[in-house]
Length: 144
Image (cartoon, rainbow, N blue to C red; front, side, top):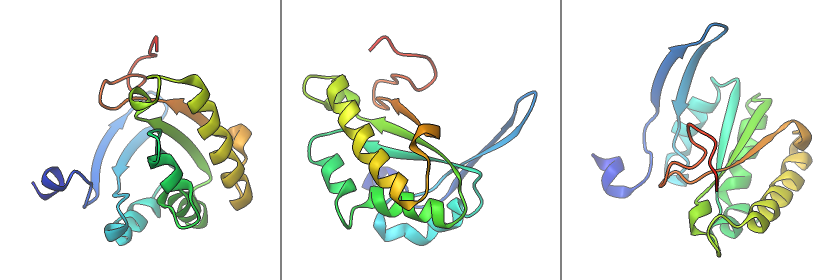
């Protein structure tokens, strides 16, 4: 209830399933700065991290700034031994114009530059434009 009221993830949530080849546990760890200990707990158990970056004007810039959460989370993931990274560029529906490929490429370039500095190989990182609100590129490839 508190998470829904505040619009942020507070605690760690787990979902488990298996495929023909893998046992998968998805850990939804909080990104909000007030709950960084919970985020570290979840991240320390991960083989792969999905870093969600907001594409909205001002939101991305705040996250990638010197003390921004995007930088902090990417650095923590690498430091905690998570070597595989996927970057979800969320809120593509809120770019100007909506689903702006130029904005996606700009974000990809900036995030790639930063993650390379901390130790990731950007060529091995998948960047996926998404809209969680509309479900674009979440379960199926979007036409947008």
